Each structure stands twice: as C-alpha cells, then as structure tokens.
Length: 438
Ligand code: GUN
Ligand code: ZN
Image (cartoon, rainbow, N blue to C red):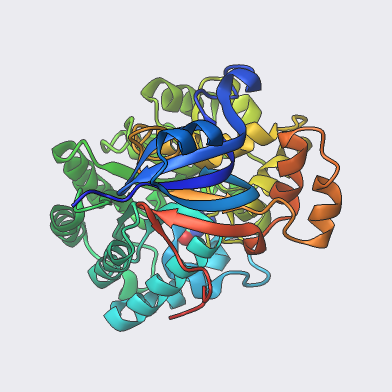
C-alpha cells in the first residue's frame, strides 16, 4: 500500500544554521507561502506551496492559511512528576524541594498515579506545541515505565531516566549506590532506543548522591556511552555552599561529577548559572550542554543565566521549562523569559535565536540534530502550527508587522496554548480538543 502524501500549507520557518553564529538571514529558511510535504512519519519536502502542489497533485491538503508552521518545540529539561505542584508558593531551591517536590515525588511509587500524571503532563505539553521532552522521573522504576509507556502510546520522541538519590532525601525516595546502578541499567536496557524513546542516566544532583552512587552511575555511563546523562549544577548559592561542605576534596561543583566519570559530551547540565571559570572552560572543552531554565531561575530565585555570553564563549546551550520548578509548560513562555533575562544581562536575543533554541538548538544538545528540530527532508514529522493572531492583544500588534520577526515576536512574548493551532507528531495530527484529559 502506498502512503498517502499530505501537504501542510502556511508560512514555514526552520533553521539551516545557528543564528548565534551566523547572521539571521543565513541561519533561517522562511517561506511566506510555504508547504511541508509529509510522507508517513517523515518530512519529505519543504518548498513554495505552488511548487509542491504542482509536484504532488494527489496529496491531501491541510491549509493553515497565514499560520506559521515550525518544527515542534523541544524542552530539554523537565520533571514530569512535578506537574501537580507547579506554581507552589514561597520557597527557594532546597526548601522548595523538601516542602513541595519530595512529598509529591513519593506518590510515584504507585504506578497508577504515575500513569495519570504522565498522561496529564504529555497532554499539557502537547497542547503547548512541545513534541519532545527530556524528563527526570522519580527514583521509582514504576515512574519510568509509566512515562515511557505513555510517550510511546503517542509516538513521541522522549528522553527520560530514573532519578537517583541515596542521601539527603526522604527514605521513601532513596535508593542505594547498587540499586541505582541495577535499576538504571535494567530500565536503560528496556527502554533505550525502543521506538522513539531514549534513556538518560539521571543522578539528581551531587548533594543527593554519595560518592559511591556517583561512581556507580559514572561506570554505567561508561558502559553505555551513547546514552545522555542529565543532572543539575550551580543553580543556587545555598546549594553551592552545601556542595562544598559535602565534597571537601572537590575543586568545585563540576568536579563532583567530573571525578566520578559524570562529565562528558552527552551530558546535560541543568541551570549552570554560577559557574567558575574552570567549570565553564571544562564544560566547553567537553562539548557538554548547559540547559537554561529561565522561568525556573526567576521563580525559585536562582539567578540570571547569561545566554549571549555562554554562546559567544562557544558553549552548547539548550532551553527548557524545568517544570515544576519552572512556572510554565510552554516553550513560548520560556522563550519570553529567556528574552527578559537576556535584557537584564544587556542583550536582546533575536526571535530567530529564541526559536532556534526551542527547536534545532535543543535537538543539537540532545545529539538528535539529524532527526528532529528542523523542517527538512528526511526529518521526523514533529510540527507545531502557530496562529500569530491568537488573542486580540497579540493580533493588534502582529497585524501591522513589517516582517516575520515582528509578526512572530508578539506570540513569543504573549502567546500561550491558544496560539497552538495544530500539532503533528510522527506524521500524525494530534487532537488538541481536550488537553486536560487524564
Ligand atoms: N536540583 C535538584 N533537584 C531539582 C529539581 O527538582 N528542580 C530544580 N529546579 N532543581 C533541582
Ligand atoms: Zn531540574
């Protein structure tokens, strides 16, 4: 049976290069009256609508009018188990973990509860135009199975891993060095590269892991070097002081990972706000990724990550919500927060740079830059379609735009899930009618 071609019509915008490295005009591929040809689960072509309509007269057509077709958003650092405690008031990192996060994460020993939240979370992010996430689970293997099962039922490309903690956490969340190794290995062997799933080895952060556990996870990573490894680093000043006390022999925070085999090119280091010069140099030399979580960094009161400076130093940088420390499920809101923090650091990030971070840039941080994050032939068909006039407030600004950047920037700054007109995952259109279904 031949696969029925489908043409999506609209404005199309994708990236052929990094707009932090080259001029925006050289980084972007924008077509005013464009089309994306889908064949099965892949993108088969992107071009002028007239050209593709002529070349594929039998294709089914979905016409999105003036809407903007983009690669689906990628969120490079989230905690799906924190969905139900998002927007919890009044605490900074360590108190926030103890007061809100750990009690909620304890509930994920129950596979049914984990399944409810995994599905709720994936409904919510899909409704916000996100098609790939990199998630922490809890320390319970059930929470990992629940998440990958829910994602695979939706054909979503996701990365996730069991969070490992063997100290400084409630008993009900603690594993041991050995069980963290054994459970992570078993889950990795079960889920890594199964369909669209990838496994990430996941020590939460060095304050909640003993040197023995960090050593065990470093060994596991060495045995599976194609896996990503995710953790947190240098998020908040009180955390830095705590790390220095817990690891008196370490040169700095990064060394608490480096000395145990947990620094590598496939490492994703969340927050990375208060790095020393040595830490910054080592992370850059290794080609490891710093993941900027702007709504979280302001919500929890952590500090201002300097995106423009890190990019110009040559760092690989990703962008993420960090739900539920982050205060939104939306990568639009996250781009807006990155813009606002950029302004406080003295740099106005261009809308192309923000959109690149949420798509091709994040794909690169995940070493998936040849699969997702672009509208390009052979890429997986994960797409978001944005209405650039989704509310009266946005429409009255975008309605007199001189170019695509003026047209899209009000949606980046003021848009939410109402701007998400359609989402395609793996070549299938997703129903957005009831995003809160559980
Ligand atoms: N550091 C260690 N765990 C967490 C977490 O769950 N959220 C955030 N924002 N920082 C962390
Ligand atoms: Zn986090």
